[in-house]
Amino acid sequence: MKAVMFFGPQEIKLVDVPVPVPGPGEIVVRIGAALTCGTDFKAYRQGHRVLLGDLPAPFGHELAGTITAVGEGVERFTPGMRVVAANSAPCDRCFYCNRGQNQLCDHLKLHNGAYAEYNLVPAQIVKHNVYELPSTLDFKEGALAEPLACAIHGADVMRVGGGEKVIIIGAGTMSLLLVQALVERGAKVLVIGRNPERLAQTRKAGADHTVSGTDKDVAASVKEWADGVGPDCVFEAVGKTETWQQAMALARKGGRVCLFGGCAMGTRVPVDAHRVHYEQLQLQGVFHHTPTYFSRAVELLATGRAKTELLISSSISLADVPAYFARMHQQSNPKVAVIP
Ligand SMILES: [Zn+2]
Ligand SMILES: [Zn+2]
Image (tube, rainbow, N blue to C red):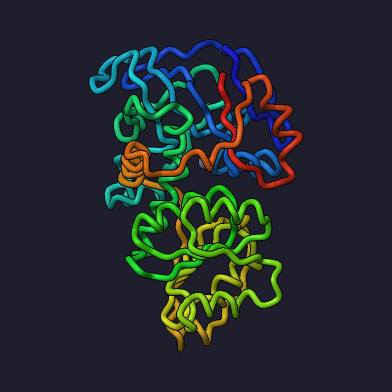
């Protein structure tokens, strides 16, 4: 079969590898659609130890497809079933997984290999984090479960409630998903971003209002929109030191700040310690997802309420992937479906 392998930063190649054969507990999925993800572009640019592990590595992590073979002991799944597989699963033996915090698992090994004709899904993922797709969902919509699960996770950890005023900094794909997860909970959302077209997309996704990040007085517009006091909750969905600081500065007294965009290892961000203490700011990092959030994402997609058409701009073939990454990695891109 053909598979895209990651050999190093800015070095991915389409290669021939054997079609996988499932061992005990494993399944093989013929990929119906894989989706490009900002994390994959980040990995392409600079490498990504957490995502990819040892090199050369299979590449791509958002996938849905049809089961073609199941290993010994697999009972819940049969060939021909249409499924979405998550890119991680609880290990069942560490402190964190035993407390439902799979995203913090000591053995967290992110599963890749979506940019290929077939994917061998590891036994732990088959056991905890593979879901059958309803016939109403196509493969590319089903593959959105992974990023949507991260957004639902963020909204849940921040305990966002009905009627709350919530800001998202950043207008990329994760922002479009966060808007939907937050509106689902009854929040009113304002998005700050630089690209006018992207901001318009977030309004279509359900944002109440948008503000251009290049405006002179972003803070004043945000405060005015949020009852003159400031937002109850702010999501940083960019992953830069400036926007982390902006998120902490925009929250109202007693407000919550979700640091959703990951920064590179070693990054330091100055914090207004006086404000955090005397104005009781709550700072919360959120990373990845767990099977609970993944299954909720599949459910939300199955209801048809998620506006999936806003999220995927076009389709490319497997053979196009290396050139596409080479051409597009410098910018922030909407999702593209890779159809083998
Ligand atoms: Zn992703
Ligand atoms: Zn674990």
